[in-house]
Length: 239
Image 1 (cartoon, rainbow, N blue to C red):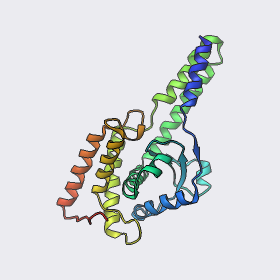
Image 2 (cartoon, helix red, strand yellow):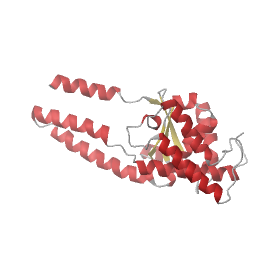
Image 3 (cartoon, one colour):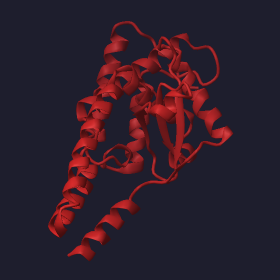
Image 4 (spheres, rainbow, N blue to C red):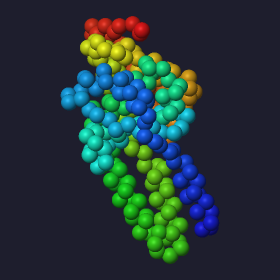
């Protein structure tokens, strides 16, 4: 039983995605695409960028930890190699807008609270793991399970971030005059359609299952953008 547990923990550890610092061209590309949306936020946020070494198309944000705050970063942004290599500028920009939306909506502060709760639960299981061999099994399995099931994201968060990201793209489209000007609100829906082509009916970017299904997200954004257009907001055509 103990050997089986050790093998299970080894498999869980192997599932972790390795990451690296961004190369200068990657950092420049991400910064250029994000700048039009960042300028819609006062004060404009700064992200500490990390590159995840996986072919999957994904991005995520994390609250600024001490090491990030010392660099003047508002939050930590992780982008996968797959997203950088497989996506053109427009859908990648929409993904960055979605992640920025988590920051502007105040989700990261909530994530930080949930993370602290998760750490407390894991600490409890760590103590249990020190009590006899039964405690070792219960403690380690409980800690591993907590890591797997305590996803910080919720369906409501993701739907809100889709809409907020679409709004940021729409506003940047009307105000930004530099390079990589967003095409508008519908850019988010188009990016989700492209991601659906990459992932089929699976959830966006290989999350654990707290995201709404892609068809639902696409319909939500299309409806939201249709409402903006009916209110008189005119979007420019994609370049």
